[in-house]
Image 1 (cartoon, rainbow, N blue to C red):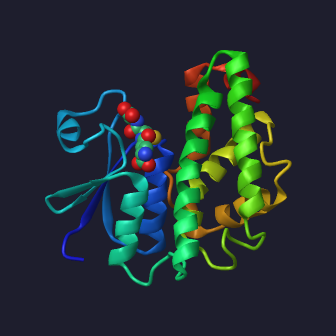
Image 2: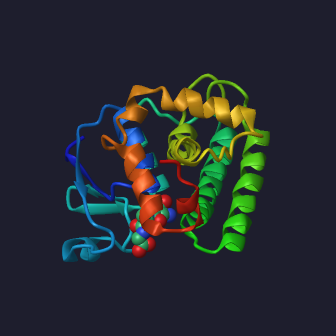
Length: 221
Ligand SMILES: N[C@@H](CCC(=O)N[C@@H](CS)C(=O)NCC(=O)O)C(=O)O
């Protein structure tokens, strides 16, 4: 790779973490620059087309959208994490996009103050998790025994579900055993543990407290 990559990040962002997991899995030497999303610096506003993280700087070029960044990193660092079969790869891409929808519903569920809204979002999350359970291979990873791109894409969501269980006792994976086992397998990987800053679980709990929504009332000490 001719340029050292620079990833623009916000510590808590699950979409950034998707990119970090691929970079770490592939042993890419990259820089990471953290910004405060509630007060983004001018230089960030001028390079991020949507004002969102992640952004990947590749020399003078800029990439945005986590799935695009994941695919770029994967393509320039063979062998690929994508399944070889074009149909499986295409289906995985669709389910990766579906995972983004779950992340947005989860965020709303965790931060909303309004209990009916929380319950509505929770129902959406649970229904989507059921759909995901139905298409999971039931093996170690989503497609089978190999860690693929889709596993990198879902890890941030599954990690956050495990923190929700740890900090509140609410187990959103209790009726999806394949997803629960998948979470266990993913969280045991070194590069997954290295994809977040030290103390991340407490930081996530701190975010729930700070947002002061219904979930904050469910936190254990
Ligand atoms: N579809 C985007 C979503 C990225 C996203 O929502 N990032 C959030 C942080 S986790 C963000 O930058 N929010 C700031 C904003 O939307 O203004 C992706 O996959 O990269």
